Length: 178
Image 1 (tube, rainbow, N blue to C red):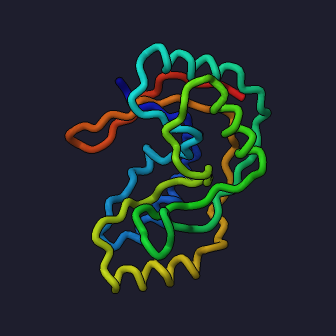
Image 2: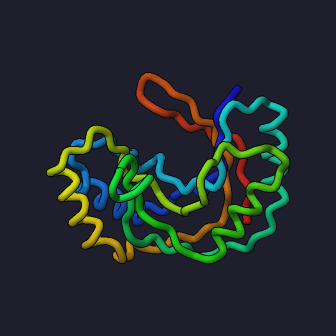
């Protein structure tokens, strides 16, 4: 059984550099996401077998969305700014919701248990102190509407996610050009 996810891979080096700069300014000892692993998850599946992976791949082949420019803007936190576990940069364009919906049409039940919120994870947070929380609140207020840049969304990828000694490793399984 495998953990897989469909995603928009962030490949624009300038945007990756800007995201890394934002991430570094916010890093108060949290676990950073390496820039080469930054992406926007469309759909996540845990415990899927090869047959289900093939169904997901076939579903991705049927996506008929045109390429579009996606705005990377603002900062936020999951599950909320009161209880921070993940710090993210937002992604904005109406087409991303349609793309996410099309990427989920394959007959395999998703493991997502929350409403789709397009984002790029920058940091994972554990044991947040009061002092760190105050600094983050200030950063969220300062950067809530900051535009980081735009990326051209031209493909959707399917990745396998595996825990390894160096953290989570991603292996690309499929790619669908838009």
